[in-house]
Amino acid sequence: MSEKTMFQKIIDREVDADIVHEDDRCVAFRDINPQAPTHILIVPRKPIPSLDDLEPEDETLVGHLFVVAREIAQEEGLRDGYRTVINCGDDGGQSVYHLHLHLLGGRRLEWPPG
Ligand code: DGP
Image 1 (tube, rainbow, N blue to C red):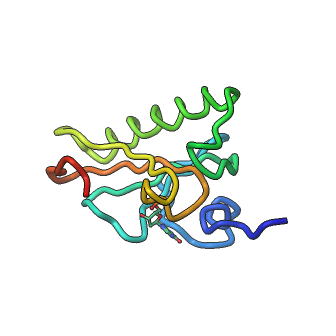
Image 2: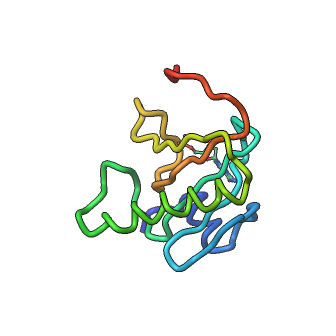
């Protein structure tokens, strides 16, 4: 069996994280290296490595991640907007191979990304 990712260890409560939301399908916690005043990762419990590994059966799960992102954005008071990002693969800047949705806000974010 392949080694658990850091996010799987957080989901399994083997590694500490600042968890802000948890339900039967996902866990959300603050990024250890925040790029904005609010930087939260929304991670499905299902260990899907990346966006590129999604199956048709994951459609509802991915939608759920975005609904949770919106709920957390409201709780965090991100009234002026926020950004959601999924990095995919090496060129997409993915470093942890357990699918996750970044929620960033609390400052004006630039576009395009580098
Ligand atoms: P990505 O590059 O899209 O794969 O984003 C991975 C993010 O995960 C990155 O912003 C840093 C964060 N991260 C990595 N390891 C840990 C950890 O152990 N705890 C927490 N809270 N975040 C982590």
